[in-house]
Length: 526
Picture: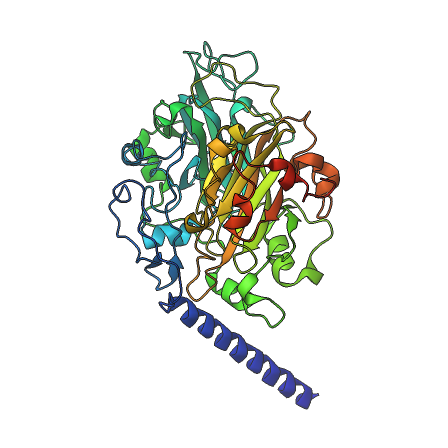
């Protein structure tokens, strides 16, 4: 028996030593400036530099945070009409902050290129959305009261999160009861430009009760625990500012003894906002290095397929993504919908991976759901639309969580053909076909410059499709997919596919206007 314990102890020591050696190797791998062979770009910022004046990365996008870990930032794509963040508003937007709301977040190069912010943003931000994350600690018996005006925008909500970036509770715009004498412009029958539009929201500790009171958001935590709160702002009218032409919400702490604190005292009493720290990185970047170098993994083409046509897959949780990529035999048949990467409870996601080793030009297509038109300040909120918002973004590896480019429904609408399908070309700018233009009937977004990891793949690519605030009567969104492999059955023609065109000459051969019938003939049952 004593010999058995000695052998077990020796094996445990060997396992610990091996794990330590692997972690040391991965740490060294990330800290090296291994940018040889990486594509170089002239611009990583919006306008004339990031709004906060933070330093630029090098020509490959390489930057190091205070922990010594490197990242490869994606280049800034050309500005598109109706972009939410643009050269006209991004500097002003950064000034819209308070002691509780520490300012807007977006992809790198808009508000900041600070290496620490990049390290901790790890969320695949949608570039047509503005995120306002904050943290606080709510004392026992206290209520955080948020007062403001409903913004002039497409969609707006609040989410609370745990430290893993998994959403806990949420309150969506149409769910919020307006103050007396006001109206909620996100509700059916209310004009989007209604003048009286005030609301009051309460944030309290714990879990929601069976009979949930209106306008109440729950922390899912105990008194004094750190709470992560995000306010999301989608497509403000005219992109005038990220708040949708209203002021930041005012925040007051109503203490258990009945005392009401002003905003600065509220921030002091709740340890808000982030107090010199950033959001926690939800994935150790060393994990990507280790997993992508497993013997059975195609390190140069992680997750990508050589097939000419591939469907997107439904996202359920982080563990499911990791298993599918690296250990598919461990993938659950019916994974739970937990979210991750600071996801939105009002959104479900589809995703796929690409590799420039297999093709430099891809086309994404699906039947286009009906979505509202709001950018020009339209008065009708289209309550019977299929969904409130749809977007498509390119991405880096899950560990880096960066976003090269995005496009949303109103920008895609001009590409929709007689069959109701949109057409989106995805490539690097250098590979953009000359007919990948709106004039030729298609849209285009930037592929990106790889997985975002030093020493990683410069050819890696990802695409993410968001369906937000889906109408319960519409049964063909990502919300309808109950398990992996059921995407086609649930979504039908609304399931997005990637078509690998390989080289830009192949797409250019489709002419202008683009011969979409030839594209659709490549699809299953096309």
